[in-house]
Length: 376
Image (tube, one colour):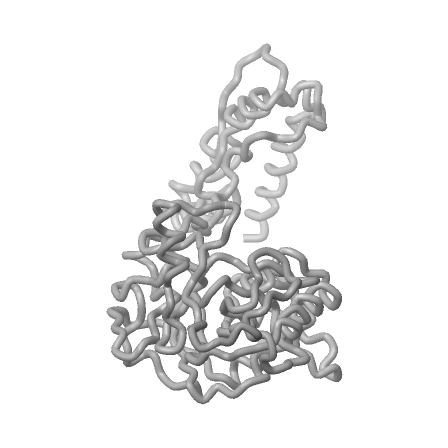
């Protein structure tokens, strides 16, 4: 066997020596016969063919090793030469390629969003009394303790509640938006979700407030679903500061691909706040939803949300959801301070404005009611 390996090494040396280190000669000259040869006409085959008769088992093993070495989709020298010329590389070795090199492995991931009839259970789900669902989740639902063990990687808020409950179910603004947009996403305005009732609020409670840090459609009297996104892709570099949020940033990139991870565990905690003058003062709305009680909260398996998904195009992600089914009033100063902290502490800017709310997902694409359980 050692002799066999020595022969292979010699053949490799011979094969390499036949190609001068000159790209103009190797790939750009046009005289002489172009064999277009790959593995079949290479020195390797000259070794394998005689062995096929004398030592069939050795030949089979060697052929397998060589096939793995060159790849199942081996590219011929002629194909590589044609590609080199088609990319206008001759005489220009610094040219940036405009197409993948032949034989390059295809990306194993499909980033197209799935149709809803092939996706896993979706969010937002109707959490009202008696609301139904049709799907059985395949993923486990993480608990409150497990969620808080995961670093906080993003906080953002949606105009209106994406979920629906007995406490927040006013869809007047949502219906008006949908009628005006004819199903199209309006780039200039986020789609509103469900609102907490305002009929019991006084004129003083509805007095307008000028927000200094929040941007976009943030107003007294309106409701917002704040999402606290926890992910195993985050990290806690300083355990002594009491804030498990070292990668807090705009967007969900840190949740889905922080530190290069491709399959993180993600939990989103959803809290619905109604901004009311004279409402409770909360000094820190940013670092988690622990500032209020969650006696009427549930957890279930769903997906990411947002206005880019509906009942036809669904989210490809599997997410654990913890949702408080109550409306919580908060002062405009407290909500504005949330945006100030996002900006001053973490340099966030995009998420200082409310995101659009996804339309309530059809019962066909959400979990059955038995999988919506009290928060534990």
